[in-house]
Amino acid sequence: MDRVRWGMIGCGNVTEGKSGPAFHKIEGSELVAVMCRHGGRARDYAQRHGVAKWYNDADKLIHAPEVNAVYVATPPGSHADYTLRAAAAGKPVYVEKPMACRHAECRRMIDACEKAGVPLFVAYYRRCLATFLKVKELVDGGAIGDVRFVSVTYCRPPEPRDFDEGNPPWRVLPQISGGGYFVDMASHQLDFLDYLFGPIVSVQGRAANQAGLYRAEDIVSAHFAFDNGVAGNGLWCFTVSEAGRIDHTEIVGTAGRISFSTFDDTPVRFETPRRVEEFSLPWPAHVQQPLIETVVGELLGRGRCPSTGFTAARTDWVIDQVLDRI
Image 1 (cartoon, rainbow, N blue to C red):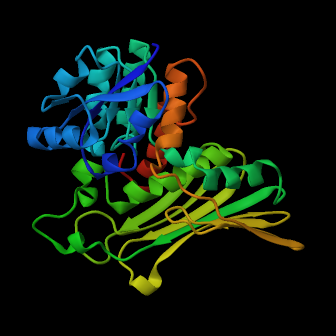
Image 2 (image 1 turned 30 degrees about the horizontal axis):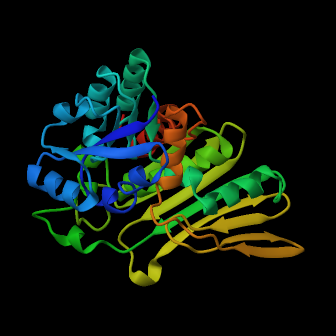
């Protein structure tokens, strides 16, 4: 492969700014076709973003001769199906997060790509953003000594759409998303912790629905342990008031601690008994671009991507245990 010519399945919000434009801006990469079941939406996206071809049939896009790699940008419920189809066509796959609705589906995706001899990448883009690379640099460099534990708290008010009983957002429909907002949001946090400390090997969790706005869980707590001995805990709640909004992760070691946010641009804070320092690092215009650059680099034989089907499947396994969705 001398140039990556992407076909994109799905034209939702994530593709408007976070990912879609990046495919055109990376050397050796271009977005040549898009697909949506609603053809008018695909045509509109293609016209607005300068994409040559559009389809309303996924198989036509996957088998289009101009497409040599597939980006699956649909909700998790269809990730496995589209990945298996792309793999059968012999085309590498870059799929949105979370990787699938269940760990078992992740395994089928991995197996299909292995059988076809094509790579599988997953859009856990925080593995390549400067803010999170600074956290990793501090941890890996021993700035806080030996890490003892990590604590995650993420709470936010309901979305206005959550109150629409007749038409709730897809993220709170378990048959489409795999669960509720915990699956959508906490997957980013759990994957980044996996990147820092390696796989979680033990986890206990509790999920409940307190507010009754939708069927999926709206509060989750968990305790977990990493293979390297680091302990962790987390609390996620999606029905607090604005005053209760929290996005805080803290890593505590024998010589200090690091705190940061996952979803906003709060500076990374590094503290020891003798030193306090903050690092304010800008987010790129297209947040997936640094990760997509590594995907393109690997496909063109000039690097490695840190977020693969193997790493992403571990996060689905953790979520399975927490939600008891075996």
